[in-house]
Image 1 (cartoon, rainbow, N blue to C red):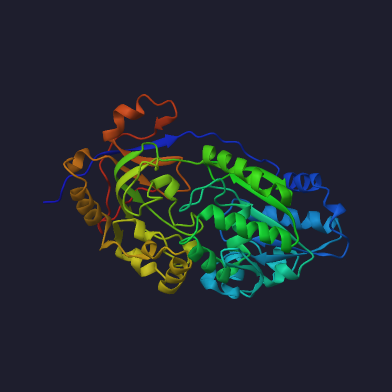
Image 2 (cartoon, helix red, strand yellow; image 1 turned 90 degrees about the vertical axis):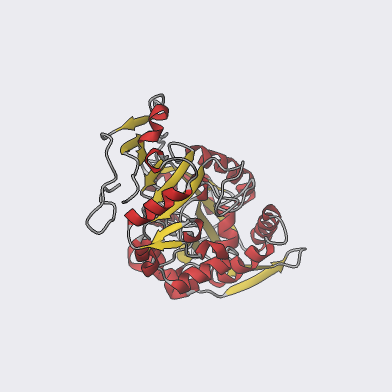
Length: 421
């Protein structure tokens, strides 16, 4: 006889929702605020970075930046700026940003993609500093990036403009080098050292920092002069943390994640949301969520087989393994210095059997009383399914609204969940 499952309700969360309503106008006014005409002369080339993260409105933001540079009579071009993503190939990275709507046709400028780098110097620790060849040849570089908490590292600076200087513009060679160096030296030491050298040597004209809200909307766009990168990004990171979405309840017996992917998070599913930032399979006192077990049900289409992050789960489905591209996943894991993130957990043919076994491993709590949460992914958390074990908690929360009656987990004839988020 199958084990019983807890009853579930659909829950709506309310998060703060600041939002930029005029994307193009904000990009233009922010860049105009820096008086770039004092530095960029007519006819000069400007490399504009585009990374691999699934940033909201990135095509519109990029096009607005390009149009602003054209108004200065500059000659902008796009540089795909990422480490090992896209299979660590120029064509793969060009194709990846094309999926975000960034092509030569849509942007009206060339895309210059290469994995070749120039070594612009060396840190005192003996670490060579890599920089994209095409960007290095440009008269100026405009760094565009989303500021957010990193999924592995902690510091005043985590993921944002500085990371684009290191990992994005450092390409695969830089990403591989810096992730190895971080095993020997502190994250802050490497990121600040590399960024300082890049800012000195590589003609960075400005940064365009983006912060998103909990609904995956563009919440803030700010142009930052190179000399202000550190202090401003430090402040923007604190703002990004405040706007980050979260699970409705921190203590979870089983978290069911419908999909993971590189456009969702650098680690497939955001460890700032699920916990496990410091340990792949257990929360620490520094994590704000504590998930005993995690089941991953699928990969996003946009991740194109890169399953980095699957190793953070204990359970998965055969269809997820079938979707994996071993080469893409392996390259990303090795480059980031996180091989366990690609390890395959226990594999099941359907959701029913996976959930049944998972609930046998949560301790003394009977399966029908388990604290179970199901999410679409770690980027979209406005609506989730939660078990009735949380009823006493949601009843006293004004930011939570129950939008369905309690009911059993619904499976199709193949044993897979049928409700959609």
